Image (cartoon, rainbow, N blue to C red):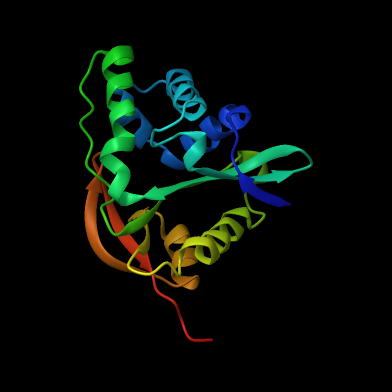
Length: 188
């Protein structure tokens, strides 16, 4: 298993994994419940630089020369700049205004999502990606390593708590109630 920075050639796997992680939220973004349109939209965004779902914001897990899991993570202070290409693409492709809450903010290194291809789920890859992100970003001064968890996903929340994340507030994203969690270093 290798965790590496994503490349433009990983865009299809990035789109697949991000769509799995986002679940219903991608439909709120594009305004349609259509798996193919959602994948195509994410594929286009993942292959381009300088946007929220760009390969530039992603790390991938590679096994046997196949990308099997993806996380996308970025400085929350850059959200508005990274979201602008998403906003423009939604307007152009779907003829609608992007109307979704800001899920992160300045002072956070935000784990936007972690997605594992269906056939590779249950192998602990999500936990390994989280541990990697904690080592890479968790100890940056003046930043919180943050993520959102759906309140109806107790399994994920249990994993996040086990790794040192704590709920700091409740918020909304794409019509879903979420909990913002920050990672806090623990004494071992």
